[in-house]
Each structure stands twice: as C-alpha cells, then as structure tokens.
Image (cartoon, rainbow, N blue to C red; front, side, top):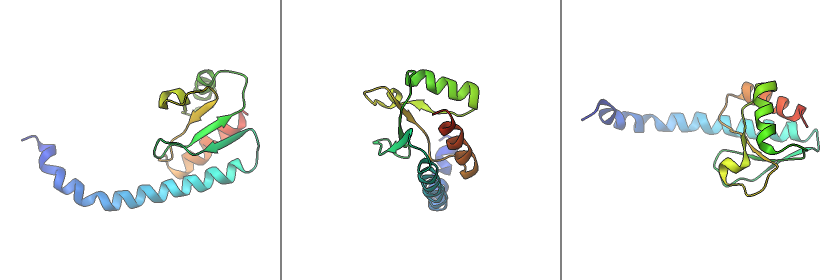
Length: 115
C-alpha cells in the first residue's frame, strides 16, 4: 500500500482545521472584493457556478483572453478567461478566492486598475 494511503486517516482528521482556515480566507477575500468593487463601475462581481471563483463582468474593448494575458504580463495578476469555466460569452474573468488576503487585495487592486 502506498504511503499516502496510510496517511489518509490523518489527513481527514486534520481537514477541519484546514477547512476553517480556508473558509475564513475566502470570506475575507469576498469582503475585500466587495469593498474594492464598490469604488468603481467598470467591473462587477457576479455569482458563479464554480465554487470559490468569483466571475467578473468586464467592460473592455479587447477579448477576455487578451485581457487575461495582459494582466499576467503587465500587472503580474493571474486570472482565467471565463471560457475556461464554460462561461458562454466573452467579457468575463475568473479569480480565485483562496489566495492569501494580502495577495488577493493587491491582485484585485491591479485588476481594477486596467478598467
């Protein structure tokens, strides 16, 4: 039996602490997202079917794929175009809520700065 299978009971035992930490971070990041988006009108967070990944409606002139690449190359912010998550139309970006609070806040600030 592989070592990881022996460790599974311990991993499952420790999951509660991990889940509490993760949910606290997600809630904090959602609050930060709401705070930052309240100051502008060019991007809005939408409810997403993808757990833990807010979807942004973005008003832009370039295709979402290009915006995502520009964010990586010019701002150091990693997002996914909505079509990675089966969003049927262009103009949506997906961000993760599981980044550290400080990284998330800075990433959203940089993301908003391009709109």
